[in-house]
Length: 452
Image: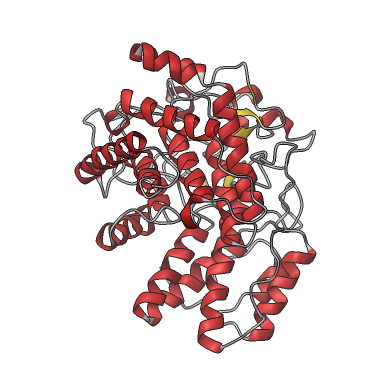
């Protein structure tokens, strides 16, 4: 891994602005270009939530017009971190309202835990973001990480002095607390710390550290809300936190340690989210996870999800029928895997920004210049992944991933992906913070990247 030179870039205009060291004018020019080209376009739905991607008639078949709980939390958290607290709070309330409207799913499983084996009966994590209605089609809804992400975000909505809403914000209502309490009881009944779920990548169910960790992060935050949550709910948060931590101690720094070869997985980039933004692993574990990702999953144009990942592998759109490109693969990926060629994993654009934030945070605590250089390198890789004029859906878009189709590197159809935009936004904010501290560049950052 050579970090002394700028990495590859797709967009020649952006490429001209990438530097191994940024002066004030360099940084201003780069940010101004991103604004002018509307790279950070987050059009909200009527509910205040977001579709997974900005779709057109050409890309509507992907299904990414739907809202995912997990994607929304990453997008809303980026708004929260970058000055858009109102957007984040409204989104957290909308997600809570979705679970409240469909609380009968959790209530049924509390009454009969056996129903949890059927993922169609679990709380849905993909839905119509415009109406908060469920989508009547098969989907791997057994995703405990998504529930953990929601609870983590909702906890941030409540992190106010004395538990009162901030000026101009809606107060925390009884129905919200009831919904959160119901979700906590649900996670306890299904024993999330040893529950097999489909996780971040919505595939074959297994016991995943990345899913357990998202719930642990939520419990770490919720158990501090003594002025918001009732005592019995706080006690349950403590129990769930302890159970999750014990499980993580047996699995980390790996993703899954089950003996079944189709489930056992050492390296998975989803573990990066336990470092940023969730911040729930210790320094040594974080270092090991990052080393694993950089050694086993780092590609020239992005980062692989895990070794042998056949989603959008080489010639994916040629080999997989159009109606199955983004289908439910949770029951079996054998058909998809049959087309996989060694080294043909897709390279994703959501991970380099996370690594950039991580190394920036390490630099702030250690002042180790190597960490700052790695922060810049991963930031430049992230910027280099923004599409160019020759890419299939045009320039200045943040893609989901790049893969090889008939010898040509191209994006998936889910471009631009709002999750990628959100992560890049966080990386720019983190680097801007360091620039201000290092050079006293007041006024250089932050620019109003998102609406307040």
